[in-house]
Image 1 (cartoon, rainbow, N blue to C red):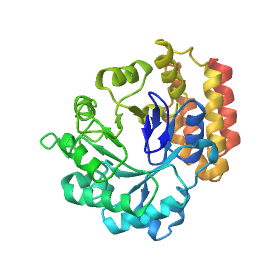
Image 2 (cartoon, one colour):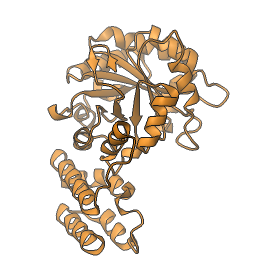
Image 3 (spheres, rainbow, N blue to C red):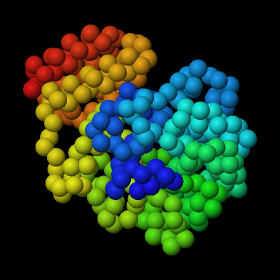
Length: 326
């Protein structure tokens, strides 16, 4: 698959942009396990223009994680265009526009998925950002605002006409948030629309190699984006790649191997931020990881891991996990 001149190979797997999840340390791990393109946490256009330090840090890119896309969000065409120029200075391979975030603090203020209620503004932002930079600009959005306004088939054509170089579609409406099952039928309809010529990337509920293969085979998408399925298990890209290549599940990682990966992730987060913030940033992965699923009487250790305040304490608790369960 190619986005503009960027070739990321056949049946690529993409790491979705996720707030408080896809920091550089996690992106590098996912890249190492086979992610073909990784996305930053989304960044506020207004915050970039104001040079807010926390947002500027989100533009940091490690060479070993490339190719990488920086995702920005906002609701004003001029501000989004200026933020796109700021993001371009970080030299990402792609700049992605977030028209899909459903959370109230974003969509409720008219940005993210909120723009699905104002198609002319959404398209004006896309055009402004495309014209502002030489870097390829792509879009991520949803099926529509709610069940009565699933306008993605028409909207996809308009986004393409506005100059976007690729389109990622999450198979839910804004009203659904992350509930229910993702509906890939409309994603497939967009992909099979003869007017569409830009890559169509499908997103939503892909948690296994078998699921990814079905998305490629049944709906014809150019790429599959994995989001929540990667939280706490960056090795999901290894597992899905293996299934796509061989048609069978990859040999399972041992508990020790999974724990070692989680420790490495926490160490890298600490190196990137600091001990306190790195640990806070990693707790979501510790809570969500399938590595500990099914371990008998694990609750006390889990609580201790989530309360740990130092890297040494986490390593000692992880050592206890191995000693008790491996």
